[in-house]
Amino acid sequence: MKKEEFKQKTHQVIDELAETISNLESRAGQIAEDAKEEYKEQLDKLRELRDSLSAKLEEYDKMTDGKWDLVKESAGNFFASVAEAWKENFGKVSDAFKKEPPKES
Image (cartoon, rainbow, N blue to C red; front, side):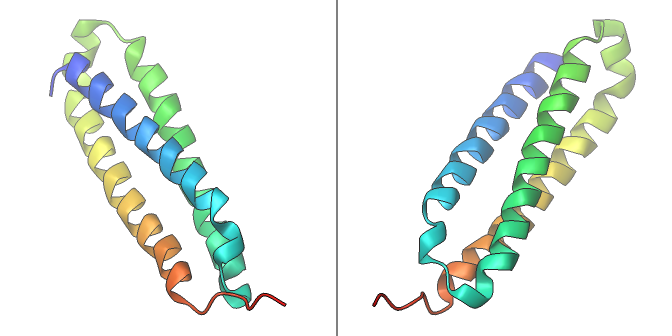
């Protein structure tokens, strides 16, 4: 993976994460009471993931091209682990919407 390609993909994932988090936050009132704590924890994990990805992108962005050649494999592995963590946490948050929502009085 080339440095520019990594930066582009990472920016795209950060933007998608930010949009997903925003959408999930706006739907928090639709979550069943017994699922709210887990929902909040998973949202926090998504936020941490976004922040970690932003920090890593900044770190890689400051590297010279020569140094990038040395770490590009680990950058690709990091990107893959972020994608997997995102899918896992997003799935857990989505499950909270499948539970019975609170009844309005």
